[in-house]
Image (cartoon, rainbow, N blue to C red; front, side, top):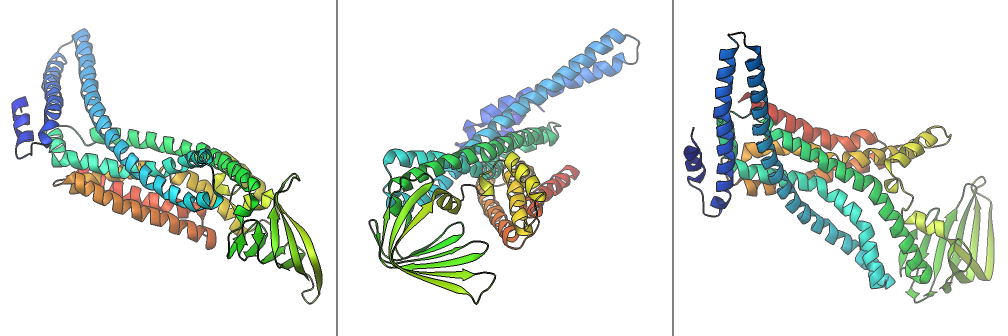
Length: 439
């Protein structure tokens, strides 16, 4: 098979737009064929020499043969790696914009309501970036690899590569390596930079709330805190028309009902806001003796809201903001404690598994993308790769959310709830690849 024959096969029936990339492919495959013919010559000479007893020449030709095998494989690996990375990067930008815009929309209400300065808004957005990057990488791997390999199948690059005697493993090698590198990168973002960004985000939010405590209260809303629930009436500036507070600890439940109240900043350490309550009625209920209760009436009352109450409500110390090391340490401490519920323990284990399952979804997506692209990519592989990639990404995202719900609410194993989508994708990927090898 000559170089001219390769070029003729590549150019046949292709549009002008595709011809731009074909000279590069032709040059690459020409090198491969040159290596193949020279390798055949080396094999022939080596077999001839082995009939004799000249060990020096036999060793020389064995070294040459090994060198040429390495060079040929290295050329193909570099080409596929470059193409896969380009498509991944483009798809990463696409998903980054999607998740970034979604994050901006989530922040928009808070930013507008709190009247946050522009500089603070930029900082809040920067602190959210690690989460956006960690989410974007796995999906960009799937869609990018499907589009890249689908395009290669449509342009007959894979067919010609197979016709030249190359195995699928030549393509699978860069697919696995790049998928693994993306997984490691995504894990670092998810495990280190995400908690770091969240801590800074909450510090900034705490400063904003401390400068104007009233912004934390929204008109006609219910605000849940650590062990308390606020039912808030109309809010105008620092004035609240009416307020109901449900508070509880291990022994007592308290219900505080007040009329018009005023919110103000506090200079006391650890207190994020103070409230002056008017026309207050307090019910104290004993958990041990439900029939016993106390009632207190007051014309005015002073109520302090502590920082840890607000921060806990915003999830600053939730498991998802811990590193994997912190989660392991916390889980071991909880195992040695009494009174830790199975549901709480499973919550931490689920988040620990999520730290690994979502970032390392990239390697499973890479395993699926390679054989799947070869199956459907014979016609319009790039377009079909985009369509199939987005559909699978949506299904994977839905499966992850459902797994979290079953794990948190149903108490199912955090390991299986987080890793099952990856195992399913990996199973189909390996199954399709093994079927391709048999053909």
